[in-house]
Image (cartoon, rainbow, N blue to C red):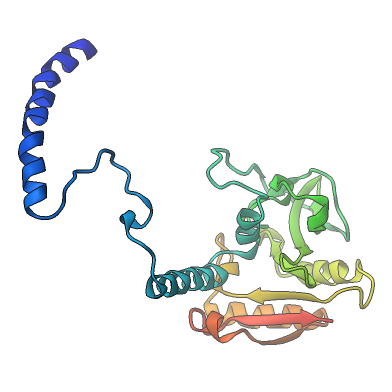
Length: 251
């Protein structure tokens, strides 16, 4: 069948080749000669890049960074930018069912335990971090399954430590587990060792059981203030996209 298809298509290709001189003539007539030899355009379509285009390109990059900062979860954004995770590698994050029972909070956890759905957009054990990233995890565990977690890492800019995720599976919410984990996470570092910070936007909403936007922001403020963070409105670029965005810092 394949050979038959090839034979049937051959006359069509021949007709296309016969039209090339005609099309080349038309291209020359309209100042578009010579015709391109490939389907790939050269960089910038072959035109030089001037100052105005450079400014437009930089503005586009700044806009993309601002949108990413406000609408992509911090853990996912950092994982992609820093090479911890490839979103197109074809494998799905392995999640476990949610067990019943009282969670135990571990201030530092390095074991490759399974994650329950709703804790984080990516299981932390799925990340390929490096020692220099200083990735750290505090987790609430039930029957060797992580049902809540807080994660942080050294800032990509080299200044301070960023809280990348705080999450509790829906079945274990409402009992102060997030507060207990965040406090344990903060206490696991030496006082005054380095500042901790995070930006809380709509990107950090729970994709399993999301709260109304203003309630989510109120809960986030209480959570971080309860752990000793100073909470204030986020930068103008964040609030231009998410008016309720917050910044939390702990020196």
